[in-house]
Image 1: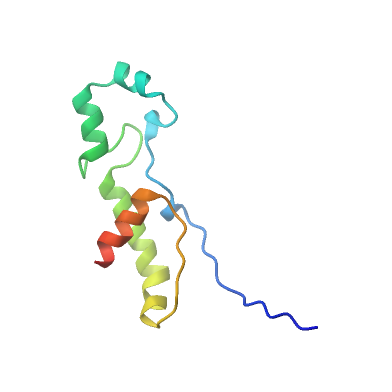
Image 2: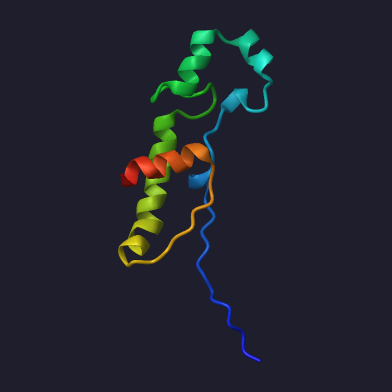
Length: 100
């Protein structure tokens, strides 16, 4: 019997990884508060161009996500194809901000 499966392209890329929290990655909240001021923690999380120490800024995540989108996804959408993107919250927001 023949298979009715469709082969779909799958792209796995670091460009769709969630934002790197650098040295705060895996750190408990109480540890973060002990090491950084409340203002620093706010800035790391909310300011567009301020990265986490050893990590990424929102702008850096946006830039790498948009590069991937334009290279691998935009053309398929323009051809009327459906595309499924599996990624984390900030990456989803970056893609949505770019296409809106």
